[in-house]
Length: 331
Image (tube, rainbow, N blue to C red):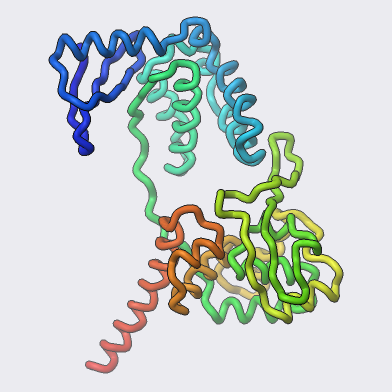
């Protein structure tokens, strides 16, 4: 029996389970029960594919990675293959057409032990994507752990001053300083001297250094998002430093992160990743009154969701400082 639910858009969603798979479709009017059953039966008949669905989940997941290999980042494909390796054989060997939402929920329940909610969501997204490719119309509402709310530590101006003073003249200096301009570590490590206009101090960001599924660092021609290819302006002294040393950064993104961690420990400051310098960029830009649209373009963000969350946290810290000043004044 089909279930009918009205959506906020005004359309009606029809749902029906068939052989352990939930099929979902939408229509722009409310059908009668028998009509909804007929519509869904036709939909299921059109979208089910017995030849594909007899494949084991292991083969289906590997086929999914192969199909997406040319359109997704090598790092994303590597992540998918890592997730597949964590799935138990009892699930991997199941034919796709025999997998039910209960099987998926059981596997996710086991996988979630000791792992972050974000990691569990990523695994569930992969499993759902594989199932939808093999059985179009497949839908499973897996119960997932609630997201953890973490307030990231954004380095302060004092942290930045100590850090830059400590790394002055170090081969890693230019790499770390470029992160302050909103660049990702892979973008920094992929830069070449030809990407910098030394007269105007303009840097063109159009590639990324990522690790593929063979654990090799490779250049990805396009940046992380559709807004990732961009031009930014850096300071004259940083441009002069790069020009003088004759290179930008010679090592890998991992080396850059490890150097930052060692320097933080040496200075006795709170640990923060290189990516948090990118977050610092968003906070400083917002403090300077730069409109969100321009901050997104400079940082290569596709959505303002993460960007807003970053500088909102920084603003909350300032609000607390202002409240303390008020309390002291009133006292």
